[in-house]
Image (cartoon, rainbow, N blue to C red; front, side):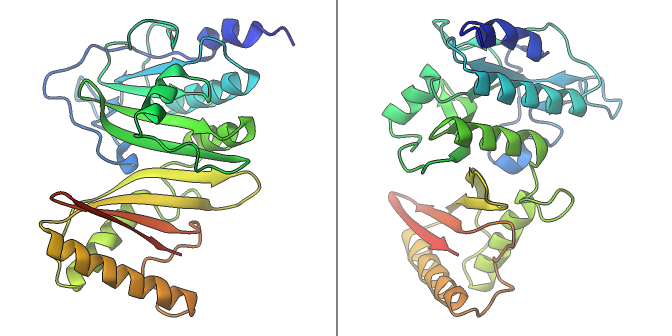
Length: 277
């Protein structure tokens, strides 16, 4: 294949409306919202049909064949979600600044904006294993704008992440079954039953692995009112994780389509991470 061909054909693979930032734009706080109307997908004439995509997609200037495949899949999904798209336009990471859109989607392992987030410690790509890819949401990543990232440890991981984003989100694995929003709601209910109120829970990242028919990990960010509640929540989650290891309490925060749920707990200046298989 001509090495320059993927870079040339990428603009032909996507049809996307690059929108200026709208006043009062809803913030994207969870991966569960990505394909929900009112965020990236908008109905601007209030007729009940999505007619606007408030998103800029940024691809590597030196695009690979895998980048081209992932971008084509994303374009197909966005086309499925809306009745109207304008301007066949895609931004490349060789441009000096990001496009002025409410949300940005950064695609590719060699994307310089992805590397910038990784170098700042906001995105941990080093933790990915061979054949693993990640879909991540980073609120206020660039001058207050929320950014989505699709990347991988290698080409296979990138393709797995792109395929999941385009074909399965917002479901855990099987389309039509459990959703990311369901996990968030059940986590909130779990904490409420422990006497810890109803803290906001948001799906911020998920990893997938080539050959695995499940999400390898799902990261949930949870915000508590104070450090005392956080410590109590961490203990309850560790008890639940231990129960799962003994094949007990399998009806609580346990999903066939997710190998492990990672809780990133926050309160004031305190943070803890607990994994529940």
